[in-house]
Length: 128
Image 1: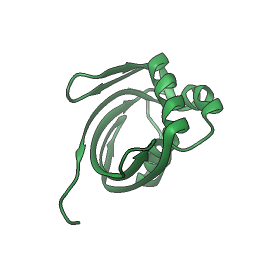
Image 2 (image 1 turned 180 degrees about the horizontal axis):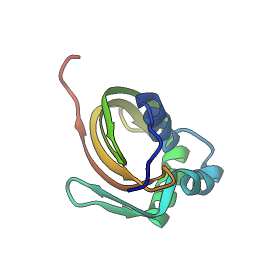
Image 3 (image 1 turned 90 degrees about the horizontal axis):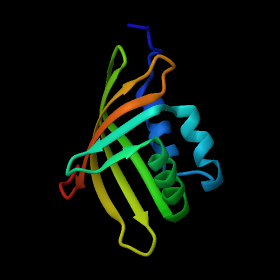
Image 4 (image 1 turned 135 degrees about the vertical axis):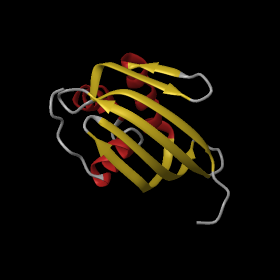
């Protein structure tokens, strides 16, 4: 296995935030820089996103997301595998602000780009 650069919780947060915060016009270049062309994301409940769909979603998120604030509560990396627990506060379009918990697992390719990702997200109502 190729050695993958160690990343920090802050590096992970910066990557995740980049999916929601930024110029929609730069979504494709951001994806090309941070995601493998073989990118594949599975979300609990059945949603599946490949690289091209990720570009579409990130362009949309960056367009309609009015608030995105995250706090990484747990982060670990072992070789090219990452696991994280993230608390999010998000406001999309005209909807209500939501507090969410995101459980994330992913694998990086040999260039340090996200390649395979698994997520579960849910509303978070407990006090921290």
